[in-house]
Image (cartoon, rainbow, N blue to C red; front, side, top):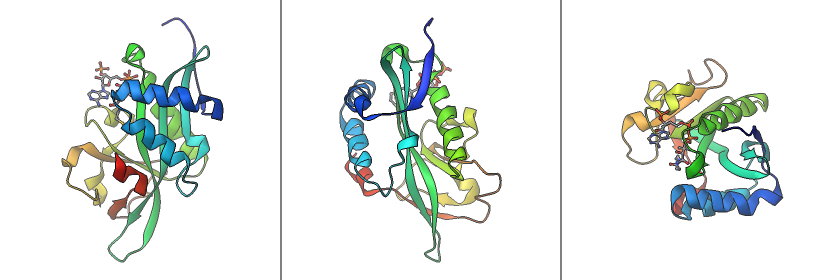
Length: 176
Ligand SMILES: CC(C)(COP(=O)(O)OP(=O)(O)OC[C@H]1O[C@@H](n2cnc3c(N)ncnc32)[C@H](O)[C@@H]1OP(=O)(O)O)[C@@H](O)C(=O)NCCC(=O)NCCS
C-alpha cells in the first residue's frame, strides 16, 4: 500500500460510505444498520469515537465505540465503552488498518476521559492491543459466550479493580 491512510472522526458526509463499508465487510447489513441506529441515540453515541480510516478520499475502515454500562451486584452503574462494530474493506484487510483503528480509538477515548473499553471479539486479535479476558475483573456478558472472547482494557490503570458486574449494552444491539 503506497497511499497514506488518515484516521479521523467520521462526518455526516461519510455516513453512506460507512454504511456500504460495513455492509461489504460483514457481508450483511445488520452491523451497518446498527451503526445508523446507534448514531441516533445521543445517550450512547460519542461523535469523536465514530472513526474512519481514509485513503485519499475513500473510506476503507471504520470503528465505533459507544457508551455501555457495567451493573454491579448492588445495582450501581459504572460507565464504560463498548468497541463494536469494526470493519475494513475486504481488499484492504491484513494491512494493519484494523489495528491502527483500534489504537486510534483507544487513544481518543482516553483523551476524552473514558476509563475502560469492553469488546466481544477474536481472542487472538484484541490481546495484541492490551485487551484481557474480562473475567479477570469478574465482568460478565449479559448472555453466554466463551470466556476468552469477552475482553476488557483499562485505559486508566487500575480503574476496573473495584468494578465487577454485568455489561448492559445499548438496546440497539438487541436487533443485531
Ligand atoms: C476484523 C477486521 C476489521 C480486521 O481488519 P484488518 O485491517 O485486516 O486488521 P489487521 O490488519 O490489523 O489485522 C489482521 C490480523 O488479525 C486477524 N484477525 C482479526 N480479526 C479476526 C477475526 N475476527 N477472526 C480471525 N482473525 C482475525 C487476522 O487474521 C490477521 O492476522 P495476521 O496478522 O496474523 O495475518 C477485518 O478483518 C474485517 O473487517 N472483518 C469483517 C468484519 C468483522 O468481523 N469485524 C470484527 C467484529 S466487530
